[in-house]
Each structure stands twice: as C-alpha cells, then as structure tokens.
Length: 71
Picture 1 (cartoon, rainbow, N blue to C red):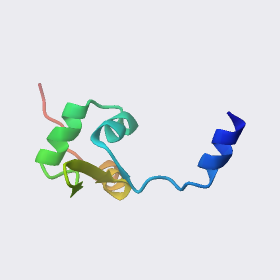
Picture 2 (spheres, rainbow, N blue to C red):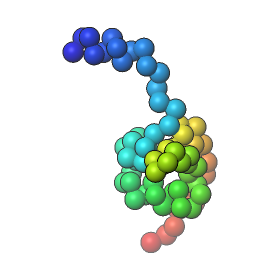
Picture 3 (tube, rainbow, N blue to C red):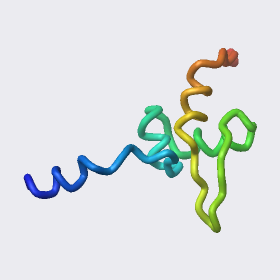
C-alpha cells in the first residue's frame, strides 16, 4: 500500500471529472448533474463519448446564486 501512495502523490488532481465523480463531490445524484448540464448551469467538455466536467465549472456553480423552486 505504501508503494501505491507514493506513486499517486506525484499525480496532480484531475482537471476534469466524470458525471459520477462530480455528483459525488456535490453530494447529489447523477440525474441532478444531468439536469444542470441540460440547463446549461454546468459547463462540460466532450471527448468522444465521454462527458467531462471541469473543476472550475463546479466551483463556478457553487459560487453562483441559484433560485430555489417552492414545492
């Protein structure tokens, strides 16, 4: 295990995340991330079939004011 951590220490944080990783970081479902993407509130980059979410996009989303809808 110690050898694995030393190898990973040299790798910088990923610049982009998958939808699942972004959902886990935000504490929401993947469906919610899909909705934010569809509403253009969360910018994405596409590489082939992969949908990548930039860390900067997540930070911008969290800094922005988002109105809530009454039930």
